[in-house]
Length: 330
Image (cartoon, rainbow, N blue to C red):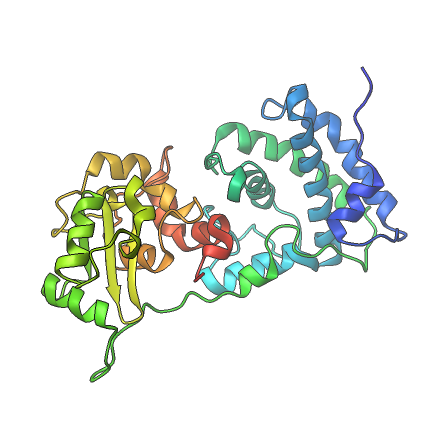
């Protein structure tokens, strides 16, 4: 069988440039040396996994290039994570053996987690960052990277944004909007809070119930085009009133452990609520923040061992990683 190969164009594409520099050949060769190891692994074996195999090998080469140069998107990422979350990586307990200016086993495990946890339209689940097969294969890759670390050339032309976009790292999590004393709020919000007796969240089991609230409490025109007809196909709504206006989360009410929520379903929350942090557009981000900051999503957990701890402790990073532009988006 013909040996698969990564070509220079793929390496240049990862760097966002067209010109080959002196160090490119060395790192491309290293990526191609990794390919047989990746292809023989339990995780990535099989012809249908060829694109993932190449991605793993390329990612390891990009990581090595950044580490040798002590720069690039990898260094940017770990120092950003340290500054924002108090440690260099999500998920993993790092010891004094972790060296931010060298290569580390935990780094390689995280890179595999990132590759196996696609975002956006490609989202199909979250990899367990503590998966035994992942940890074992990361050790094999780490040994190859460790052996190459002192041999690899320093590049002055590092790839940008190959792991996490700079723009996404620069986004700050904004505080939830709070009404200032004497501040006039939108009419919809004032009417909502009057109807809810000051509660910022209300729950509706159907579009008909939501529509009735729009007409009776918010005084909207009882005409189909005025009553958000696109919501007809949904149910189990959460409506969040805040000084900016009203936010509506369809199909999410069962996940909110609110004493005022008759639709809360603990079993569904345990099984499905993690998707709010991972699927773009599933839940308005301010509503997600409100739920976390008021402990209303306390049962949200990944569907694997230690999934609650891993999500609850890393939820902001997880939301940023998976939601992309929806993180603090409009």
